[in-house]
Structures are given as structure tokens and as C-alpha cells.
Length: 492
Image (cartoon, rainbow, N blue to C red):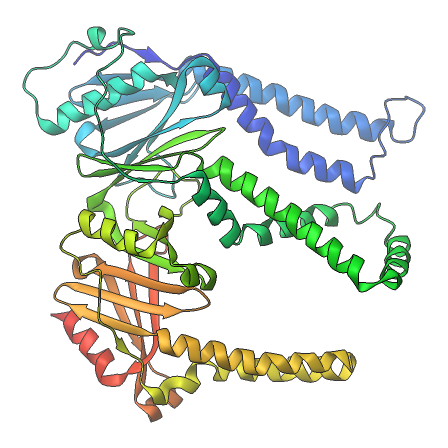
């Protein structure tokens, strides 16, 4: 390999600056709103100095962000040498990082608006040692040809190719031969609409609206609004119901737009024992997920999707996945028919049993699924019935609903041991099925309270590596001998 030095594209300075400025928008907006928009550039105004101070500080921070972006672009360089990707950056404190190609787990590509305008891509280099969800190295903006060269060099190093290719020749702006990668999943527009409708996106949008409105609490005349609403209520329940339906319709429409932007052209392909996920409308992302880094697979079915035969497949990964934060959970199939899901997973992981026969929780354990919730409800129902009488009496309906939910959870709870595979199924509100191999399990824990001991039942937890704290599945109140069987299976 050559040790020729390569730099980031100049657009990376702008992208770094915009990223820094974006993080300052929210605090500045909160200050402006909390001050009631009382700003003035008139020297004789009492708000003149507040205005100068705010915009002066923000302007200074913007200049520093721009300088920082330019410095990062000018000082960041990378090159290939001795089977390694080497980077160097920093103005006063020089930092170097050498990453052997065989240690690279994945190369994740992101294409934001600026990237797509100039035919660039952001490359995130993930290794097994990546921590906190941060990539080992991030190349903010390079040409796609240069990104392809990095991937080519990585493949050659991993395949131990004897003959090395001249780097200068590979960097010529000639299109590389495209490799046909088989597609195992693609989300259509219809699927996007179903995903937005059956997800919690509407609730998130409504919560966002409430959060935004709360920022204007000082300038909203709540008393006048309350009187207007009182007059509006007198008009009739029909208009109220119509208004609520209109709000829900707008929230659904916004949820569809958000889902469309995030999951547009969501495609999963498989290549060289790696899953390659591409998605996004405004910002195109490519996430690489090695199959050997997958620790567990979760199938999540909320009641509406369970009724219609749909599910979401989530994989727990021990390595980086290019997502923000330290979360190593990634939706492999955001929305898929349950039958198709099991068939596809069987092709990807043929050694796993995707049609388990569960050992369920015993009947005598049923009260443990709703007893604690019932105890918490008693003071709430009592207070509501006393202070909000007679409408507070409607809170009594929470008792049968809680009991029914507990019975539902009891019928769902179960496990299966099949050779080296451990499968758990339980329900909070959505039904969750977790498939994991014995070698991937970090720990198995059995807990038993005093009341469970009297009924000879135990709760079982199993944890796999995922993110900072791992992912834990919990099947409550199994037969005691079943829990002991799980412990013996895991111990030996």
C-alpha cells in the first residue's frame, strides 16, 4: 500500500460548522421565548443590552464553530499503510489513530443534504472496540470513489490477497464495477403507511406539540383560552369530537411524513456474511451489520400488529451500528408479516428453531401478574373517586382492565430450551419473543420473592451484550423446577 496522504473534502468544514450551530439553536430559542421576544437594537431601549449580549454571544460561538470546522478540515488527513487505515488530526495536540483493516467490523455511510449536493459521503469506521455508539473514526465528507477504495482495501486485507493494487490507480474517478447484492427485504410505500399507523408515532407527535406549547407558557393567555373553550363546549359534543378527530388526523399525517423521511427505500441486503441496511429520504444511510456480531433477535408485536399478523424484528448487536447514542438495537425489519419474517430468519440463521414450543407459566402464578398493579391502583382510585366525584368513579374501570392485562401477560409468558438455543416470550403490552444462543448469553438470573416461594414459582432473566448495559429478557413467575432447569442448562 502507498502512504500517500488524503484529505477530507472542503465541504466537511461547512458540515462541521452547521452541526455545531444546530446544537445551539434550542438553547437560543428557549432564551428568546422565555424572554417573551422582548429584544430591541434601539440603544435607548431597556432591552438593548440583553439583545446585544445574546446575539453577541451567539455570533461569537458561530465564528468559533466556523473556525473549528476549518481547522478540522485542514488538519485531518488519512492514508493506507502496512494493512492499516491511519488518520491524523489536531492543531495544537496532534492525534494519530491506526486501525488494522482486519479489525474493522463495518463501514457505515451517511449522505446528508450537503453530501448529496456534491456527490460526497460520510464514512463511519466501526470496530469491535467502538464504545458509546461512537465510531472509531469518522470521515466527515469524502468522495464516493474514495469511500469505495477504503472498502476495497479492507476486503483485500481480510481476504489476504497477495497482489496489492496501486492506490493511485484505484483513486482515479472511474466507476468501480458494481457487485450485485441479493435483497432480502424491501419496504414499500404501503408498508410505510401501515408502519406509521400502527406505531407509537402519533403519540410522539402529540407529545412534541405539548412540549412546544409548554415553552410558550409565559405568553399564552390561558385564562382567556379557558373561557373560550368553555363557550365552545356549550356548542355541543359533536364539534368537540370533530376537533379531536382533526387533531388526531393531523398527528397521523405528521407521523406518516416522519416515517416516510426516516424509512424511505428501506432495504436489507446480505453480502459476505454481513447485513447491509440502506434507508432515508433526506439523509441516506447505509448501515453494515456483521452476522457474527448479532447477540439476540427480538420479535415485537403490539396488539394491533399482532391482530393483523405484522411484527417488528429487532437485532441486538455487540458491535457499532452507526446509530446515534450508545444503543445497539436496530430494527432489521421495521414492519413485516409474521410468516415472512420467520421464513427469512430461517434462511439467515438455519441453525435456530424459529417455531418453538413453549413451556408456559403455571396457573397458580396468575395473580402475580396483576397483584402489584392492583395495589398501586387502590389509592389512585380512592383519591379520584373522592375528589372528582362522580366522574372519578370511572377510575373503577381500571380494576377489570388491569386484571385482564395480567391474565393476558400470564398466557404469554413462557420459554423453550432446544439444544444450544434459549427462547423467551413475555408481554408488557406488546408481545416480545427473544431468540438467543447459549454462547451469546452473558448471564442468567433467577429471582424469587417470599410470596413466589410459597407458590413455588420463580422469575428468570437472561442478559446478552448490547449497548452500555446489555439487553435483558424477563419471563416472570415460571414453575420453580423449570427455572432450575434453565440454570442447570446454562451452567453446563
